[in-house]
Every structure is written in C-alpha cells, then in structure tokens.
Length: 121
Image (cartoon, rainbow, N blue to C red; front, side, top):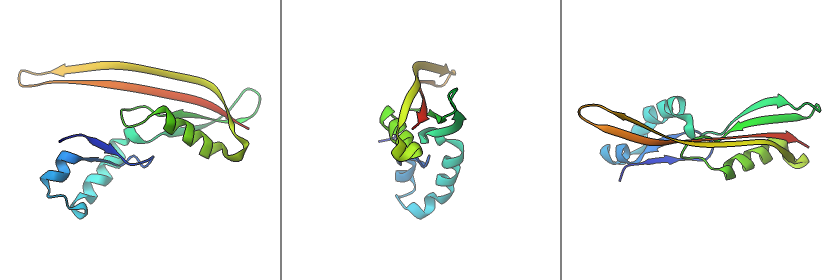
C-alpha cells in the first residue's frame, strides 16, 4: 500500500510505495530521505521564537499537515519551555479540500493547518 510515514519531528518522509519499488533497502533511500527532509517537511513542527506583550518568551508552533497532531504541538511546547511550563495564548486550526485535474488524472487532498502560540513560564 502507498502512503506517507512520518518519523517524529525530523521531517523525514518515506513513501511505502517507493520503498517497496526499490526492494526495501534503506541504504538506497539516502538521497530520497535527504530530499524529502528538505522539500517535504510537513511532518516537522516548526517553532518561531517570539516575545509576548508581557515580556515572556514564547513560541508560535506550526503543526500543520496530515502527519502531525495537536499532541505533537503540545509536546514540542513542553520541550521548548521546559520545567517552567507554558500558557496557551492562541490556537488556530483549519481544514480545506483541494483538487486538481487534467485530462488524464484527478487529484484531491485535504490540507490541515494547526498553529499554537504559547508563552513560557
């Protein structure tokens, strides 16, 4: 079966169908993994450093994509803020269906966006 598999916050994507096409050898995947990490980092939660109006350190964390979840956002916020904890300042989510077609094929996908802004301590 085809599909995309995400491994943690690394942003590395490996297509199961491609893995089966090349015989399942991981050493043959090095170029694919590097390219996927750069071009298809939808699995990576990307924090942006910011400061809150009250002066506290904060982060805007983008956990968008099919391979991510809110759990990943909360875990990353916890890792970034450490023992001081965090307060959720803003949370946003949206889901949209996009489609494209040619005379030969029709492609449809759901785009999921998730963003959380946290203030540390």
